[in-house]
Length: 423
Ligand code: SF4
Image (cartoon, rainbow, N blue to C red; front, side, top):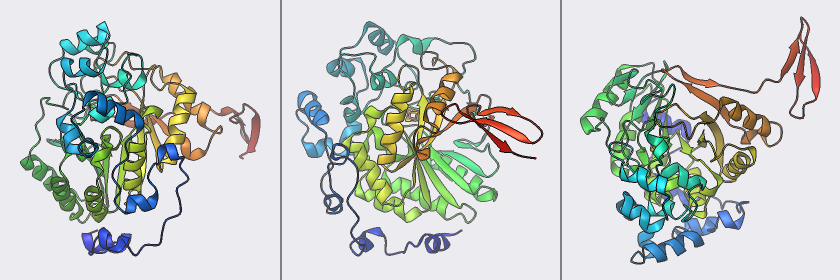
């Protein structure tokens, strides 16, 4: 499908989004609770400034008194002022001995990097706070446990050209950058993000685009990294335009954590640009309900209003989100933000991840605690990304009690048994 066909298919016209917005009928008021949605739809349409929660405002005034509200809401300022070392962390957080030692000895890829906004969500005093555990290293990160490896998904093996993974027949993973605004300590691509052995260049993008052009079986391109939304709007548009121009590419996807850790990046310029490249889908990386702030409600609202279907990806992490109440709160919150819970991943056996990994049975227990007990939309697929490059394998609780020649005996969510005739 070329650009013109794509526009006809999606009903989008060359005149662009901004000009047509004024003619659209008014949207109904949002049903989100005010805590998550401080701007009304009309305020957002009029270009009201980005929201700032009480917590972030207090953090800004205390630790970045020189930053005005406008600077704080400037995503480039957020990137420039990322917390990246021991001194920066110690300024805003009372580090435990374990954290302090781990940060002090850190070298190599997967550096420390936390946006001031995301730092405002971390507990100053509690090293066990879920969000703090996901972003501040501890000594466990330097241990190597049974079955762990630096590239557990075998992505390097399936790399068609540098930066392009072609594993499934009809789709490719396009690694657009090695940069993230905030580095997760359990990252599957820790070998390459934030200055690993990989480099990314324009020439490399061109080679990857050429490969896709030559492989007519590729109908779906997932842009990931690193985080593609850290790339400038102009460069990202260059890439999206090239990919959209390939006739056999039916749609694009972007995998990102930026709307969660750097929500200010979702500017009107960005959404205006993105909506020119429909059909475009987005997978957002969420970890815990404490990430569902007014700022994140705004970033997801802007993306959803730009017509981008939003799905979530969550890694199951020990002591962080491995319980039914926490996962239910996260999934319910996502639905209120118009994000469909999509994947719940068993944590990949990346080197140094033992302190994050739960038994596989824990994921099944969580799915069983959700399925039937809440809205079906709130139940993600629980998957293991098979080590060695086998792809995603879904796991579901066993609801089959027994099976005979003509009857299946099944168990429902409440533990009651039912029979289904099936000759
Ligand atoms: S945002 Fe994604 S790519 Fe970046 S460190 Fe986190 S998990 Fe890894």
